[in-house]
Image (cartoon, rainbow, N blue to C red; front, side, top):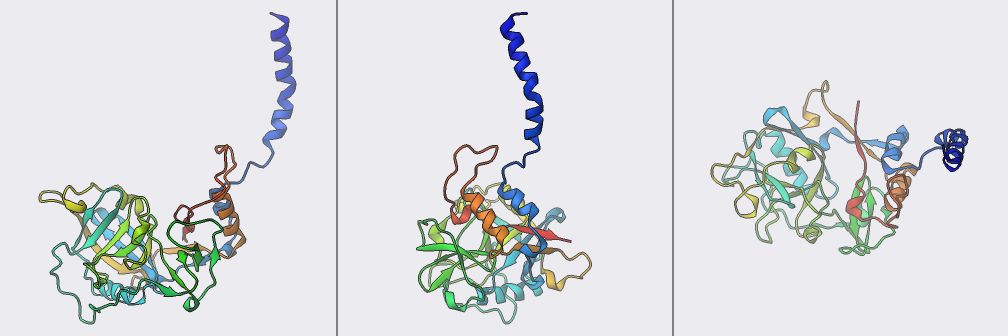
Length: 300
């Protein structure tokens, strides 16, 4: 055996203890590790009257967290529609690639329950001072707003005095006709593609999908205009839509959202912007609002 090869083997085996010792070194943190290790105090429970449970064909479900502080009139309608069972038997009738999945009454002729507001003003921006919690700002530029950040667990865009929800992946909005129509909340959509932020402040956003996005995003695309299902294409039937607060306590799903004022969330955002773990070689040095979703988990 050549002397040089023996020397290489000797160096390798002599280095094994050192390699074993290095294996005990704590690996670089990742955003998912921060979320997994976050203490109980870093989480806030989601109120059951803000959870909309949509059950579709096959017993599969989509869970939407509603945002009454940002769209109070629309959320009031949505709660009333759910309590009336208005969506039962309707369908997901539009799936446009890289855009939205939309559901409700495809005919737009079904009568609304009594008491549903049909003349909601297009008020898509809220006063910053009216919100219950102070914003946590992102220190990175945004193409659609002077500032972005998070308020009470929600991603937000802001100017000096106003705040609004952004059209990030998974956000749920109210389909409408031409302005000044603002929709009623009977026809809803979820963003299933790259964030169409040009819609910000033009359509009411009422919440976000916190379970079941893989279902909505993987539905067959409609071949009709704007992704509507054409004749002969199967729409996804909706079995029921209910508020979690109206379901029996036993079996009712519970969720928690990470507290955006916690140290865990600060660490999570820092690592989303500065990945330098085993996979990443070059940190980005910044993160887009829609690329830093607030962590949500199902609680026991």
